Length: 304
Image (cartoon, rainbow, N blue to C red; front, side, top):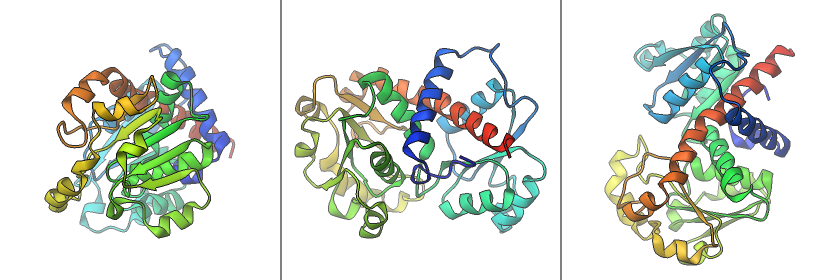
């Protein structure tokens, strides 16, 4: 694995190894631990704001011995029209790796091609691989893994999280049910690219919740979609996750939300607070999963 651009690009073995490594890193976390990125500088290029992504990456880089360099859209020439390939070729000669959180997925691909340094997709409109790794780590901890498990993703299924979950299901073999209005389901072109996979699309959230091991939701109005907020909230209202759905799920079902959460919209206040430990454990796991990615990329690039 030379870069982390999307779950689509990973193999079953790579996914499983990253989760195993993350579990070990979490168990052995210490300020006195090994620092395999000692002396390195990693650029964090964010044209989308964040809380968890920035804090988890800066903390992880520091713990591994590296120096994070945070750059927003106003700090780099990208905000003034410089081609991504030029920015990549400059930074690739100065820093040791790049973490990019932006809108257009092609920007991350182009940066990895031209920068020739380890590149991590910290979120694009196409995929959110770092979040999925944290989610899989949480599944491993709380429900024993993903074998023979059923994950229900409710709400806007045609988003980066829905697509990343679909690729994870394809690689790892668990059942994924995306419960969403037809216009918010992954489109035909994506499903064709996904190919044969244990992924079911439905508009019946009550049926979807039956025998679920994980009930998962995400914000209904992502950055860049604010103009559609009223229409989205109206269309997605029937797909809110709440306590009645939990009763249809398997005993021990976990509730997950990649945050930020908008109580009373995609999830009820009661359900979020009732499963807060699980949800904030999931948030913490961003740190451990991303440290596993950083180490894996450094080892791959060190080998040539």
